[in-house]
Length: 480
Image (tube, rainbow, N blue to C red; front, side, top):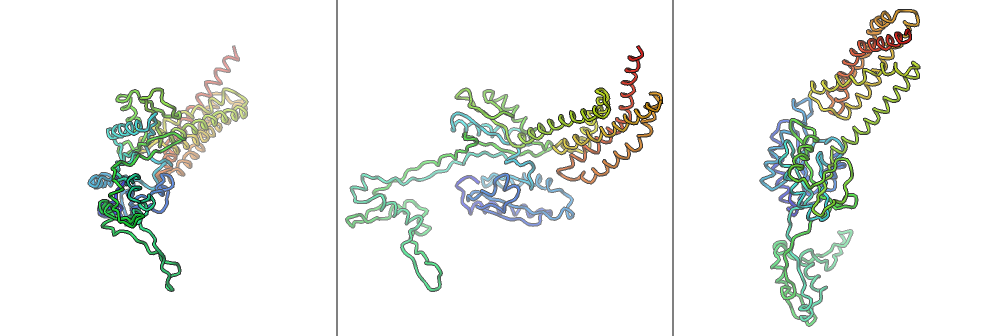
């Protein structure tokens, strides 16, 4: 809710939301938390929900029936709830977000933009404009900013000169105001039924505490014993509460966050859509995807640092790509040591790039996203493929050592080794089927199943052909 919303209003919105949620047959029960955080879980730990203590914060925990009692997955239920719940929230000026447990990578938001600038007010204006661009992007939902809602406050300013003339001190005036609003412990009641002394607090009735004019009517006794109304020495000034200034790496920053929901579920599509729109509308803004933000070159410049799942995705695939490259180098060196040749390892490793022919179409056929676990599957495929290739090449060398012709050795190796290679591939594919429906490791299963299927067939055909071409060329060169 907007900052300054009462706890009762927040609870009223939660009641409205829970009434709609309970109409779904897949929902078992709900838990409402108004003005306090829910018991800490993965969301609370990563997205810092456990820090929520303000009256304008509310949390609705939705517990579903067991998956055996429903035909719809929790993700689809969350997607169906977003639009009606947000419609209810708009009636109360509330920002309703739908967050799944677990939400995915450990980030505060799927799409996160950090706005930097030379002046904080400039950053606030730029963040509002960026939020408008978020609204225009396709499938981008749950848009929010770290900007506080405008809040008015009344300052009670003591007119010191007039107070001195009337014989009042600032301490007397402050004590009177504190007693009327917050209360003042004037004494303690000691009783045999109470273990600790019970404070006796003096303050105005709640009906009067909410009315500033009633507060100014109060009279305070001065040093001469005269009663002076507070309105004689105190005046009301209306102002606005200053914005909360957030810092990251000791630099003021404003956050704009969002999530992605729709046909293209990956937040990267929404991020690049927003980035393209910014290039058209705000060409003087600098966008940083990888490097850390720096001080803008001009006073009018705004710098956007993209964070969220993009940062996790980039770091994950960067590190895995480096690991994949080191793995290829180590495999090459091991095969060189095995066959004592620099060209045969290239033949052995030739089917490795061909796994993409199976992995990528496999994700398309299964309507799945290429995730970090998919990359892990591709790294695992490299070892499986090289093992099959070594079996073929080693058998061909054995046949050649026995005096068999190159053509017959190649054909016989493919025929003899086909059955164990295929059985090994089928065994690995069968094991991957058991994690195919897992929401996290299904990418690993798809990579293994389709990668092994294609690579096994390609290995039985490609390795004998490449080995035959390589050996035939060497034999012809040696003959000449």
